Length: 100
Length: 497
Image (cartoon, rainbow over all chains, first blue to last red):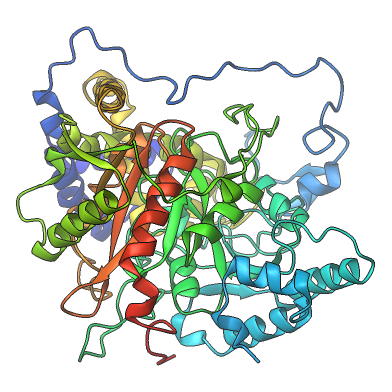
């Protein structure tokens, strides 16, 4: 299977990465080389094989149902959360207007 | 006085505890070595004050007769993939340039709690994607090693290339690394040092910039197996903040070290003898077998039939997870924002990510987006996850016949920076021997074996059963004692930086 220039442009748009013509021109053959190479996985008979979901058997834990069970991941840290924001106003993240 | 920068973790820790020198003297010596090594470009930022403060705390504890910790007085390099409170953390990307975490990663906190200090944040391939340390936004890292008779800058491997370069050049006694598909082992092999990736789940991923979460594992890089054992013990441990963290006690790997391999069986996978593998790599493998036999082990042939499919499966699974993990870089919450004049929210996302991600990162995000997209999910992603099951099953069967596996770490020695930059696929093949253990979540280590005809280091890899880091370290120690790599080049590679 290979991808066309239009398909790569569509994938880039899905991935929210702006790509110009020159970048698309180099990306198309590179992606096709890689996709052609991974095609070999189709040779393997995987009937009856379950896709891997956990590499080391481990049970999913539930934390205690309490507020701030771990202070590092609990609430009440608005300043920390906003400290690295490119634009923080009135205690919120600032973004360009999204409603017309 | 001993040249302090020639000492490793154990020698520093024991020397500080014994009063041979102070932790401050050690920190000052390494800070000076780091400052004088800008040509290697191993560090993105240096933090001499952090190293000095940690050293002073250790010296004060010693004066009071208190316990100094398992890494007491040892200054280390921290791969810039670990969040460090108040110290820029970038994953070597432009999109995170200037990011100052408000919290400390579990692994780095564990190391500070054990008495270590930080020399600085180490360069790496951008978001840990790369095998040569040429994808960093902050420039290539150079290996301290050069081919005999040439002056070209060589690759320190990747993605933990700042870590490998710093440890091999002795500007840091040890460093943290992370390994998603060989990123600890391949750079260790390229630079003649040791590095171990533990069983998936041993080290917490909390506060580590995510690449492919089902594969990412932190581990130590140092110049001896003993030093790796000490540092891994300090880094590992259960962390409720990471859902995949193993709820198991950390074994006493350092005191458990035993290079006597009597009664152990070491498997040699026939599929790792691939067409075109470098003759000297095969020669190092033969020597490795002899060394382990000499240590008392029995060498047995084994088969891992799906080996050749591991790397292509990895290049579906890892980009798929990366495309999902990297969705968080949107120009809203942290890092770079590129807001073109009059742009809306969607345009801002696309412009920010275009400006903030490097070429290799974009390539992998696109592959990941494609293999997860409707219509292709089964053919690519699900098929790769099934192959991953088969690769893991190969190892499970192998454990019926052997206790650990010996293989080369890489198919070639290091190469000059720039020599593979237009050939992503050939670059990916660097990790062909490293990736299977990653897909199966197994502990695996690289130990230096010999110098090739060009005077460049070659590494040997040991892969162990789940949770058997001890078995891996023991076999590594047996190789270290017989390869006597440090004696091949006393004092390390010739200083040119």
